[in-house]
Length: 94
Length: 135
Image (cartoon, rainbow over all chains, first blue to last red; front, side, top):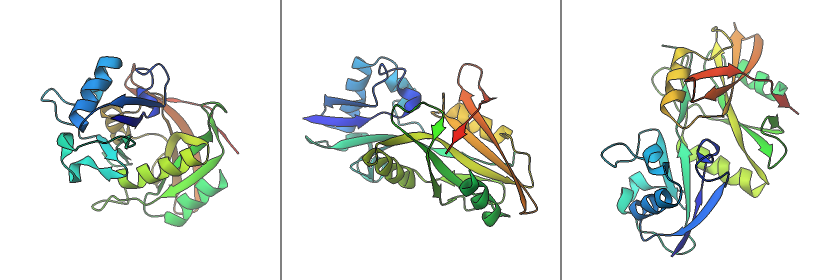
């Protein structure tokens, strides 16, 4: 089940500069493992030590946030697009 | 550039934010399109900003369809200096920010807006000043 994964610029040093990679995975958890096998270090950037998605990372499957689906158990099918989106925030206050 | 400064002035006294886009392959620091975003910060929008991931994924898709990609982001500091705050640095350091451009626009009393451009470097856990070309 080939899925397209869009890689944000800060992670492309791990994908050899590729902005999009394609791989087979049955669900989001399997996708993260597959990404890490191919591009060592990606899982650590996406997940904490317990394996949960980091708070500053959002994964979208076809524009749906996996937090509102089944998180890492969200199923994937051929043709799905997964976007890795960083949380962007800040401001003048401490 | 005037679009960004105008957005910062018109949004005063609240922080405004947006996304900087460039053509694929045109160089990492050449911005040719700016997309204003909604500041989703609810508690302290005068001194904080947040771009919702839902907005960002939509902007990212539009950019790709247009042959562009996200080079970075901008936000304003109403009556605060045109440089990244410690909050900006801390959040960038926690997140996925290596090599990403951040423009910070200081706005004095809603009138005078001054831009500055920076790139975050994971290696030094800090922003570095960066020349930025905006068409």
